[in-house]
Length: 122
Image 1 (cartoon, rainbow, N blue to C red):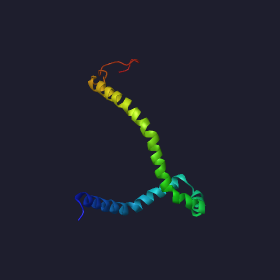
Image 2: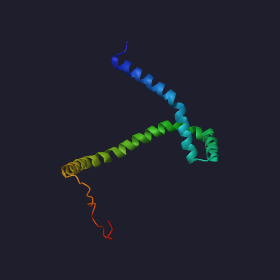
Image 3: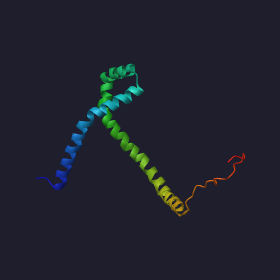
Image 4: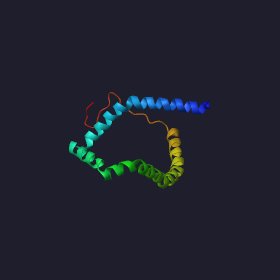
């Protein structure tokens, strides 16, 4: 018998799989709309031709690994820069929010009903 965590994980995995199976058609329709907005029929025919070629097949096969490597590289490069920004930015943001909370709320002023405008009209 599995642990409670393993059982919960299995149940969650099964639920996610069910959701994905039921939404696959809807997602495919939405993806088709995105491609249709951005590419002509000729573009798509050329893409199919390319991805059917040996070079296209190699790119398709390598894409998951390349994507994972690009994401890892992005995290290595971007994360240190973001932490510097957040270390400086969060205290400033908190200070700004405190100042805004302490400031009296601005209330819109309206002219009295009998006030005259600059043109002399009421």
